[in-house]
Amino acid sequence: MHKPTPSDVTDDPIQEDRALARRRALARAGLLRQTVQWHWISAAICLVGMLLFAITGITLNHAAAIDSKPVTVAREGVLPQALRPALQAAEGAKGKLPDSARAWLRDELKIEAPAGPVEWSPGEAYVALPGPGSDGWVTVDTATGGVAYEHTTRGWVAYLNDLHKGRNTGPAWGWFIDIFAVACVVFCVTGLILLMLHSQARKSTWPLIAAGLVIPLLIAVLLIH
Image (cartoon, rainbow, N blue to C red; front, side, top):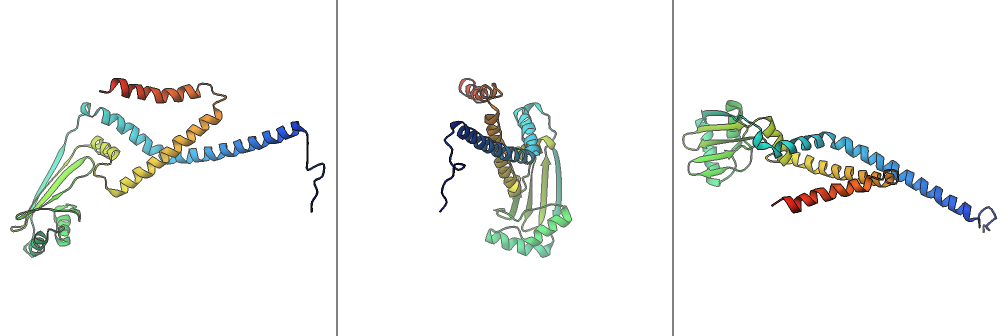
């Protein structure tokens, strides 16, 4: 069994304080290293998305002052006789648009009809075609095969604004927004930790953080009705 030697035990409080200070300094340095690493990684992930959301925040806030000229494209056609029985069967079952009809729309009229819900009314299939910065629809007469299509785009600003809102953007963009939001939280939390670690040398840190909280709070309470 090992017995303590004079080198193992010290009664010198100065040496104990120095050892404790060294341990604290090493722990602080380790925390600073890890925080800086997470901060720059999250900053790199957030960079483009944060610029996009900041700029579109301005365009959304001033949407009424930004001119947009909608562009509408309309097409018409007739679904071949051979494809109509499948369409009529789908109407009876209140199902989705048949794959054969969707393929014909894509190949002949350059219409990308989704394999999603169809609004059926007597003798007609209506498919909504919403998208970011655009709206559209296509109808197919189940008896005559008559096809009518219309698509309206409202420009790049409207497109980017809809990306900001996640409007008609699909699941992939929804996942991107969620991941981007998590990265932003990491970026902000690690930024706060860095501010805390350097706050002793930067006396304005806490007043500025407090201002960032109090100013929007006062605006919300006093000026929003």
